[in-house]
Image (cartoon, rainbow, N blue to C red; front, side, top):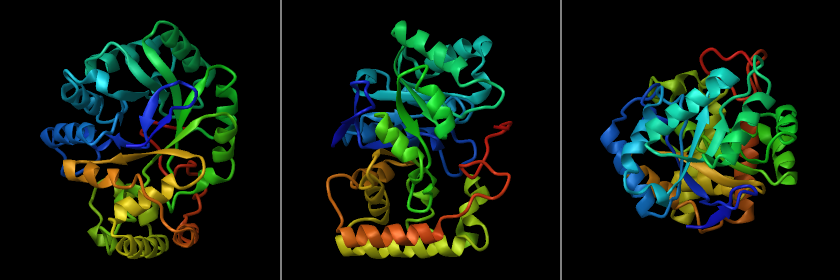
Length: 321
């Protein structure tokens, strides 16, 4: 699979990465550890070399699943995890990091990230701790997730930020305005999460009633007045897939990868077949007219941010930033 450099770190990562949020089980339906481990092993067989998780995914359960799956295979993989916003204080940061190491059954993390910015803790505080971990050889690169430009501006003054994880898909386009240009200017990789909008734009659901009663039910994209436009995008993705002999997931991911500045997509998967499908997004190019048609449809569907909500349409428990 094609690889790109992670920011300025020198670490090479595949453009299609495996997201392991679902493997934490919490908030998702129809997930079990055996399938999750088999999915990780299948990803490695296919050449995927980047796994993304967080201590907040199932209270560390996702990290534990990865730790079991990588026994004897750790050196094959670039492992990324995240510290929760509530553990970004100096007195809790190191404890949280060591706990993640224990879950992952490793003595280092390739990419350590701040999961969310938080108004109760300065951006500088956890980044200074990350710099120490990097000096100690316990992490190889520093990243952030869900940061806007003001926090990014502060972050790059404290540490070498090699990656940003924002939500980005055909129907989540907020980063195009300021965040994407900022990252390109500063050599920060953009690793798009939810590139299939949690599966809502790949032809899986034809009505709101069909959407599983899990975290997707709270997604603004499923709300009345928005879902209808999102579903129209989904139908266009399916039509485009038929034209190219690809799956809808491959089209949605390929569109992301074709967007200037998007270096990687983090594709969630609960079964080996899911990640096998996602890897087919790499290595081909759709016609510009089809890219433009999908882009225009996605912009039409893009949901304005409700007043009082965060930039990313949802908030983690206890988050007030």
